Image (cartoon, rainbow over all chains, first blue to last red; front, side):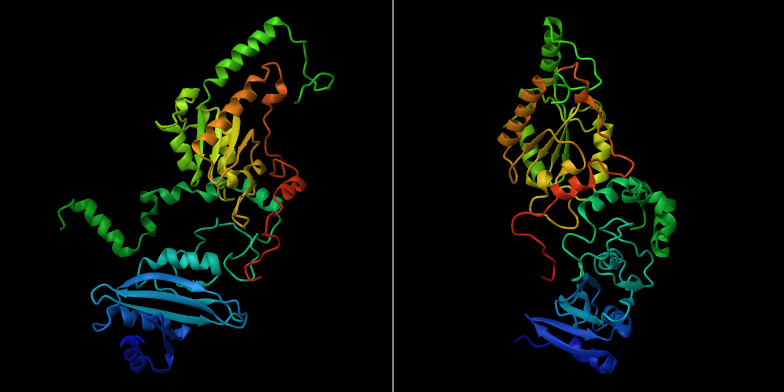
Amino acid sequence: MTPANPSVATLQARFGAAVRRAEVSCGDTIVYVDPARVHEVLAFLKDDAGERYDYLADLTAVEYRDRERPLEVVWQLWSIVRKVPLRVKAELPKNRPLEIATVTDLWQGANWMEREVWDMFGVRFAGHPDLRRILMWENYAEGHPLRKDFPLRGRFSRSEQVRQALTSDLEAHYSFEELSIKGAAPYLPANVRRDVEEHVHHGRGRA
Amino acid sequence: MPGAEGADTGVVQSSPNWLTTRLDALVNWSRTNSLWPMPFGTACCAIEMMSAFASRFDLARFGMERMAFSPRQSDVLICAGRLPYKLAPVIRRVWDQMPQPKWCISMGACASTGGIFDTYTMVQGIDNIVPVDVYVPGCPPRPEGLIYGLMLLQKKIRGESVFDAGLRVEHLVDERGLFLEPKVVDEISEPFGNSVAQTRSA
């Protein structure tokens, strides 16, 4: 059996009870973290000089068939410099609102992945800059399709689904504003906007 | 066929004479041999469609000289691949933008019936959205299948009459937002095969 990733011991020493348990599955180390402190733990894993999990490979969620079992949000981390993977999970009980802190402030790439988890599972990411549906259209009314209680064919009858599709505003599905970079400028994060402006003002001579 | 003898269609039907049949033959000949397809390729069927257009199968031999990527300059809508509900208003708008005369080919199992995708995302056959003239079965159909479908369509066009106004009626989406009766949509979207009443946790 592969020994657990040494990061687990570091986390347990530093965060104590916030690290609930850890296990090794198929050679991958999985750390279960208190959902209330997950942002803190992930920020540590990203920025600490000894950890440096600088790449968020994936962010997703899992719901199990067992109705009592909590829904899990998964962060799959990878350290580019150390070439080490680590999987962090947080369990969200289903009898409470599914909400957890966003990590878009740590990894910009988390933005769309969190939108996908919201769209498919209905997990709200507190502090997300733009938490909208990403795969289904914005006024999709049938719920969150990857939840276990979601019927495979959707909640509405086929004729109702066709009716909603045909009466919907096409521009709501495919908005041209979203495709325009100029229009998106005010929504860019401050550092990216600064870089873009610098690039425009000073040409390509930055590197 | 609408406008058959004896049916009260409100359209003045003259008995076919030499002139009208010759005119039909001329118009149908030209329409048959200059079908410009509007490709609406959404999945793997589109690969077979591209193959049918390319040098080996060469649809230009049948008068499909160019793919018309503008619906306003096309005659046949070829829906090649599955159609999710998110794309349903798009294909409807493409169809509405095509000028008459126009025809539609549903290429492959998914476009015709939803195929294996009997799920919350998928339109169960594009005939829920637009009227279809020819269904090409297959998963995906080989290019020969598409060519056979197009030749069937050509055969169908040769049988049309320019004086039959019923053929060129626009079937628009009604005020409820449906193109067919809700009952009909539900019926043709019924599950089939082994997928009856499945849920994700069942």
